[in-house]
Each structure stands twice: as structure tokens, then as C-alpha cells.
Image (cartoon, rainbow over all chains, first blue to last red; front, side):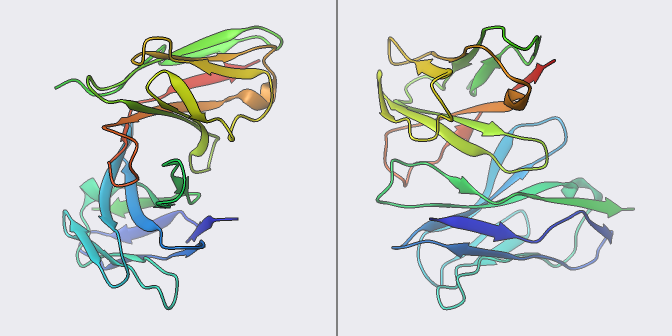
Length: 113
Length: 115
């Protein structure tokens, strides 16, 4: 079945470090891909998305490119801040399904000042 | 405007008891979803409503779980004969329409603890 596999955490970085969180997916057809973020004490929020191959989603300095050939959607940020500390979820949705989102297991990111 | 709200925020119950979890979607959103997030895991789909009807309930784990949305707005997730393994955060989301293109907006969740 369809699934998402992402880098296990926790990931701890110093402020201004470069961030990569790996994500790969398995799905038939042409899914849309997402990164969601869950800040401490808050609900899930959509961070960015890409709906077709080679699309780049970006928001708040984060970027991810939909790579069909490697079935990947890695999250990157050039210079992280303490405020980026959160749990990040890679996810997919398929146009043919009843709109259910399939999530990865999440990666906890902690940024040291 | 107001986002998705869920009540209660926390629920502690004893094994074997019945619980109800409520979700108030964003006004005007016709689609409503329930997910369950176990500790250290990503959310898992439970059920999807389009209007009043359950369009997809394939994620409900067994017949102890049931959800309703009688007027096409508020939804209630009902769990009978709770078990310790039901302990999780139950998330509700809503979207404008059923298309996969429409963003799902998530509520803060209800943390259910079964003792």
C-alpha cells in the first residue's frame, strides 16, 4: 500500500545550521506531497506542498522538491532558528483516494541557541 | 476566523467505558476527517465525511469505533468499551470540498487516556 518513510529523529542542530530531513514515498499514481509541522502545544499546520513532479514547495525559508525518479521529497532549510524547533511530518495524498492524507512517523527537530 | 475546534482537549477514562469526542469544523467546510495519532507516530486516517454521510470509513480499527455528523457540521467520534490501546491523540480536520486539492485544516486534538 501507499506509505511515507522519513528520517528518524530526534535531530538536534545549532542555530544557523543547514537542515535536511529525508522523506521517501511509495504510491501508485501521482500523489501530491506535503510537509506538515507541529509546534509545541499547537495543532498540525501545512508547511509546504508540491502537486507534481519537479515542483518545488517553499515557505518560511523551507524548501522541498518533488522528485519522481527517486520518489523523494526532502525538506531543507539553509539556516535554522530556535523557533523552528518542532515535529515535522512528510505526507502524501492521492487524487484517486477519498482525500485521506498518509503521514510519515514524524521527525522531532530541536535547535540549540 | 475561527479554526477547527475539538472538545474536550483531554479525556481520561477507565477501560471498558464509553467516550465521545467532538469536532467543530471551520464554518462552510463540507468535508470533515478524523485521524488518530499514537505516541511517536504520524496521524492515521480513521474516517472521512462529505456532508452528513461517511464517504470512507476504511480507517476505523474495529466496530467499537463509530462517528456521526448528523447535520453536516459538528461531528462526534464515539468509542465503545475503550481499551488501553485506544490511548492516543484524536485529530479532526476539515476542508472546503472533497477534492484532494483542498487543504485540510487540523484542530488541536483530543488527548484520550484509557487507564
